[in-house]
Length: 386
View (cartoon, rainbow, N blue to C red):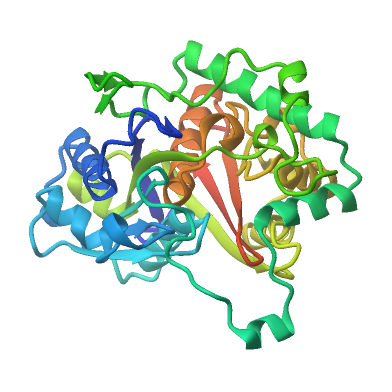
């Protein structure tokens, strides 16, 4: 232990809202502000202690524009001295904010930072911040939609439609079990939402997992990208809304504030691959972060691998060879949804609580990213006794 250890004091998130669901009526800047406010309130922290709010958000336009990190901090009522920045590393944007926060603390440049993320995919359409690709880019690389990359992965790793659908069904079953057992209760902060009739209510759990999903139902879904393909809406992540926030401090600062750390950031890593296949960088990112941490696959107690598509996680499993029971034990984005900018910090919140629930020591989170990148982070639960 050192005074510059980057420790995670707490992590909270909203429930995740489905496509045209209960969170669709909430502005993303206000939803982000809500989790910031709840994180500070839950930890009885004077917001003046926060040096920066690092907000992951992918489609930074419209209500998610104008530097939503700063806007959310102001809406939350934080002092004007508290700064905010918006980060876009696409799907791993808020896992990136966690990494950046940890780097600043470990370097001794910051002491108290909030790493957060938000995305309202209902209110701000994915890709609406982009335009035509540069001809110079297209001369050098083949750029295709992520779904086509998911198809390439399924073919290269010889994954069948049945395997993809089985993985997806299991994701829903795990998530339903987690909901029934209250495994998400400690990370979710209830938020006032609206039902389909326009009636407001306090939303306390994710509305994305499907208890009625079956292999037969999944088999009826048509391929989404290629007429003879394997990737469908059923074995892909869901369009969704949500926000999450993680309080990261130095070990010394946590002590001065009387806060008890829940986990330590051990190592972070980035990896890049060909932007055509795009979604396989989680494989080298996992290998790199383990090497940096001087740990092995066998040392990990939990893996959170973002379920952008079932083929992505199954290809990763074939290459990395983890214990499959340790992978996404409470379901993943196929069942829980993937509010792009929020998913990284959501994964961290879930992983910390699962480590505490099971008594595990190490957790590894990794997320694939559009145009061929990945982020990986290893955390260690505090208070682990060998």
